[in-house]
Image (tube, rainbow, N blue to C red; front, side, top):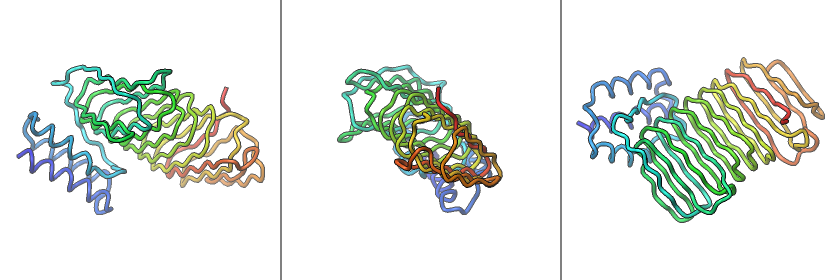
Amino acid sequence: MWRCTLNEQMRILKMLEDGKINADEAARLLEAVKSSSPPYGSRRRHRIINGLEHIPEIIAAKINGSFKHACVKTTKTFPSKEKIVFKGISGDLKVLGKAEDTITVEQDGFVKTSEEANALVLKGLGGDVKISTPHKTDVTVKGVSGNIAVEDIDGSLLVKSVSGDIHTQNLKGDFQGAFVSGEVRLDYENLKNIEISAKAANITLSMSKKTEASILIETLDGDIKCDFALKDEEKTDHTLKGTLNKATSTISIRNEHGDVHLVKRD
């Protein structure tokens, strides 16, 4: 039964990725599969963790993967890596940059960790995870539901999520994001390139007035606010184009049904 249920979940996610069903239809189908499945055993959990490799990169539906009733809090330490990759179904994630040369993972859910060349890979079913890592680390997060917080990281950050809020503080480097919904607050001390695609997220980007970037913001029906005076500014109700100081980097944000606000950093 557990094998059939997992296959059904993966089939639904694939249909969503291919555009054969929409997010609401996928959510209803996933909930129906979950309701008809038996309680999770250890063998089934292991199978689902491995199945995370096949979750589409942008999943437009929630999966209620609450396993906290059987969770054990653990802390693990790993040598520093160039990159951290986290792929999870549910639960909150916090990534903190620290002045240290090891990676510490604190978890109260089902999370499988593995070391692959220059990366630490984590696959989670449910529960919260806190990762402390050296400041200079690239981070990739692919999740279905749950809040994501990232602080004091100097590196490339890639986030793809379906639901939940995303908050960052004191970042340096590139950001690439794809979201379905949620409150997105990005705080950059020194940004390079920003590329965001969203369905219905409210996005706030806080950056220094000394930032040098070409800017293109597009929405279908959301509002655009900008606290900066741009060179060669072109603005309509749902587009904003211009240059902040000079075009050293690029900020590109497309948000279909949410607002976008560019804010001066304190």
